[in-house]
Amino acid sequence: MSVTKTRKRILFYVPGLEVGGTEKVVHDLATHLPPDRFEPFVTWCSVWGPLGESLQQAGIPLRCLPLNKPPRLAEVVAGIREIQPDIFHSFSHHKQGTDVRAATEAGVPVILTARRDMRLWDPLRTRQPWEPSRNENTRRITVCSEAIAAVVRDVEGVDEAKIRLIYNGVDMPEAAPDSLPIREELGIGPRQPLFGYVGNYRPEKGHGTLLRAFGMVLDAEPDARLICCGGGKPEVKQPLDALASNLGLDGRAFLLDLQTDVNRIFRGLDVCVHPSDTEGFSNALLQSMSHGLPIVATRAGGNPEAILDGESGLLVPPGQPESLAQAMLTMLRNRQLSERLGKAALAKMREKFRFHQMLQNYTALYEEESARA
Image 1 (cartoon, one colour):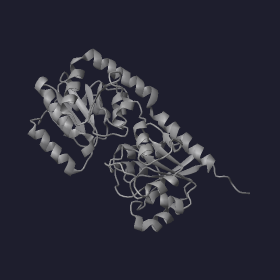
Image 2: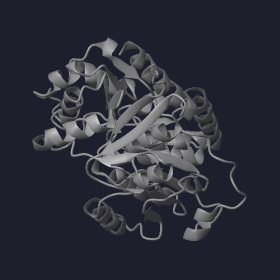
Image 3: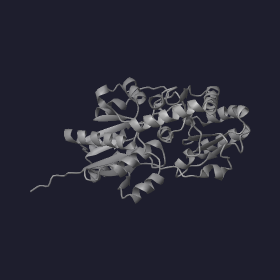
Image 4: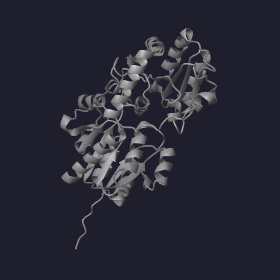
């Protein structure tokens, strides 16, 4: 008598396992999908990092496959066949379609792909020759914002019915302790205005705009301080350190490295700032909302889907330090406004962007597509 397989094996692909928004989503799905229904398996091709260590500790099987190298396609196909997934979900794009081609040749029943940014790698937004075939062999394309969905429709020419919107979600933070250790560690007084930004040091994240805006804020509020934290390559971080020094921000703006517990940063802040030039849908923005903090963000990508200008935060054009500085000062000086916006942001996060909602939506997608296989 044959035994019916009840659990579906899902093979996730993400290029690297460093700390980042997309990588964190894959990590959290792999570690939280219902174990009685799914067997997660994670593959990557380039960068090992802390999330890989965490997945190992959680007992999630991992394997490095060169999905970013078309000449090694046969090796990738053999590796996927060995894993025998029921579903292949690629959280990568702009890799010449090797991922979907390999999964197709390996005979995976259900192939899904994800779009997580506003096509950063393609500033001219031109449909690539390999994209039609990749999309034809993809059952569903998951997106994390309406803004990204519009790009998939307009640039890639994908039919609306093939796109599935699933917003990112985060957990509510634990109750705040009585002390604010990040202020104590950096010598920032309890009454000094403190702005903060959690985001990896990448060119599109707008740190330069924020530093210039903060210099303007200091002209009006000399006691203010700024904390940024995130990972990033030295060639991006070092020029920002130099810019901060040239702007006279030493001892006032703290550009910290990646923090294992960003909640301790959020707990010490008065205002969160998200100055990115482009954004798919920011997990850090949701974390800011979960702390009930007043938020100033750029009107970029999916940010307006999380923050409504004047209702749950303030939105400004990207790349404009003057506008950003003015909004930062407005939040600082109008306490009644900032408290109202912070409470509204928290309420919206609880309503739409909880982690369990994201998990339920992905679970439903996997079960729905498995039933169609």
